[in-house]
Length: 219
Image 1 (cartoon, helix red, strand yellow):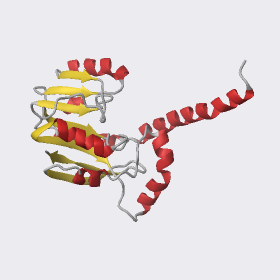
Image 2 (cartoon, helix red, strand yellow; image 1 turned 120 degrees about the horizontal axis):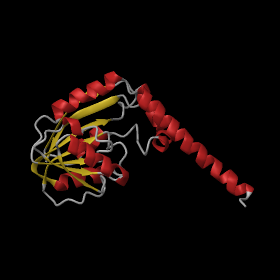
Image 3 (tube, one colour; image 1 turned 135 degrees about the vertical axis):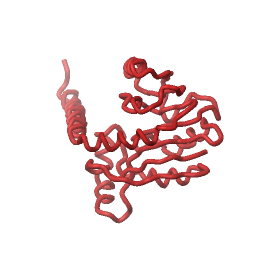
Image 4 (cartoon, one colour; image 1 turned 180 degrees about the vertical axis):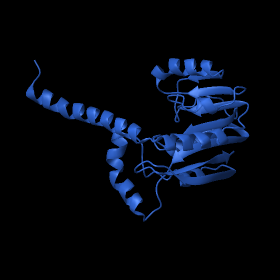
């Protein structure tokens, strides 16, 4: 028989699990068709000239796969084992040659200087150590290889939105799978050691994480 302390100890955990699920449902509902279409158009342009060996870190539900050309040698580094069979099925339906491996931004089990292009979309906000992840990307890219990214970033210092991001960050990352709304991804990219970085800023219709960047960093 469970004690009162055990029951009371479990209630907060159950509450936060339910709250987290409700939060994600709310966020998904907020993703307007305009937002999806805008990212789709940007992805189509960003991925148009992919060739050779391409590695996507954490493809998750495979939302990028439809934008990839069929003649690339694709590796999906996905930490969620349960998504592997789904990704294989989706890649097959799209005619993609995709090798799905277990791994994440901190553990890229790939040879040094072996990848033509690395892709991340809405990933760098949640990795435990962004600098470590960027160095891992640099390690596996061939000389002249490209890192393609679409990421949300911190609002500029001193703005009202940045104050909100800073305030809400502890709760947000708990509910949103370790996502940091105030992470300065653009600054981390500029300091990582790429030979060149080109990106554009744009806004999307999402609360808290509206500032985004899209671009290419070259090793």
